[in-house]
Image (tube, rainbow, N blue to C red; front, side):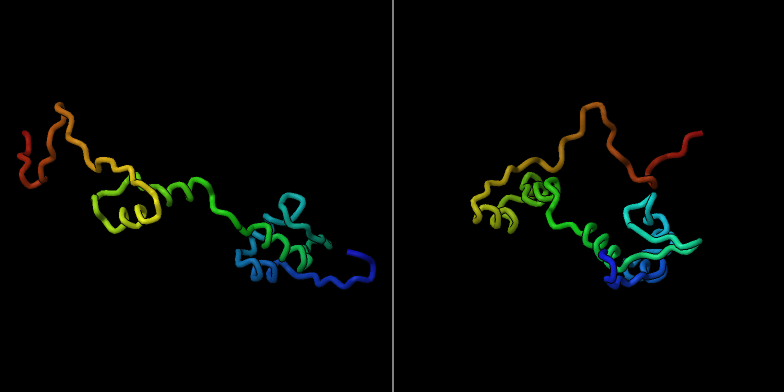
Length: 122
């Protein structure tokens, strides 16, 4: 900010309203401990409205995380052959990798029984 330039200073309450967060969180975000520059006048904390807007823009995500994107493009868990989802991917040149959705019980496992059929032991 250059000398003579008017910059509106706002209170913690106004900053909280603009950011959509609690007042306590605004105190935590205030410099020097946090990322938002501020002016400390006595016990009062004031923020430049431009700094609040700049911080809000820095919190904006503009790209999809790779893990999310790869999961959304994955066809590894299609349950039914010939499903609408499978045909959707086939039309776009993707070949789904079908996997079994349930496996057989291991030989040493005991099948589950409903609680009503279990006899109490004494």
